[in-house]
Image: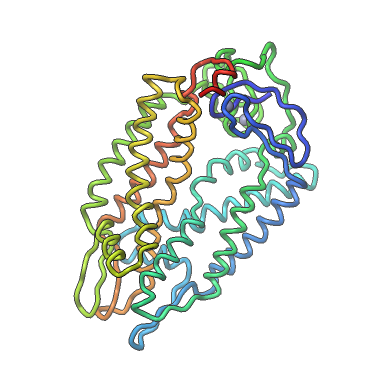
Length: 413
Ligand SMILES: [Zn+2]
Ligand SMILES: [Zn+2]
């Protein structure tokens, strides 16, 4: 028995075999998916990813040469380099999203799968398994690679660039990390860790969980009865809510804060480039215009989409979804849920510009000859990205659906 995370519909799942996938009959959201040998597969991928990260951290990342001055940086310097410019909070965000959180995630996966392969879970497995799903959206290695490519294209015409072993290793790491997250079968993992407690008595399919006083666990999927004041999942211990508390108010507050930060993020320069003694600050929009003028149309487009279109689109889309959830829940629910998913998925890509600034500031250090430093907009812009991501997580997509509507109706929408 599962309650759909999106629309709260209660569904009874048949036993699934490897390669099978179960979708929600009302909204089409994937409820569970089985893989072949899930434990061995994710263990192997996680180990390989961790080795690639180790290599990426230990060797030079990229080097640059300009008029006889050479500079090579390591991966970690893209974060620590920012501290020199008093950008500690941004440095922490960069270090967490590209190295620390992915490393913790991989160690967690390895710990869990070793326990499962041995047949008896290692200590703290339940807490680790619960944390993994919370870590997931904050890992941004793929975004960092795009940031690295954009940085290299930006300076390719000005200086000599050499890619180190670490660069290629980091690319491998990002791919392996993505593959690891894809093979994690949380449904199977929770079943193997703790088993599957019986569904609550008198629960039946064909209505929403909330109508029956039930709630599907957001982490392990188990259906629980909401009978105590502060209910927790019987299987994984996660807090349960029939709907996230004050979801709309929280989302509004975070959106409002993000919109406020969006002003300084665009009005102040995000990057200051010094060349032959002349400093030229550039704002986010200014950077896009510059790239366009020198003919780097694809990069200009990428930065425009990631730094301008995505944050603004996200603010508008989430704001509209909040209004829609309150005014007209139950209409166009499928399309609205898709829009919500899109905002949840694309939000992290706005970090590209922050990574570009981090890489260039660490790499280009030839004093008055040529150097790059982060501008005052870096912190508010990173704030916008983090706040809009949080706003998307506090929004409860179940609010877009009517408490109960027949399956047929959903197909017509
Ligand atoms: Zn559903
Ligand atoms: Zn649970």
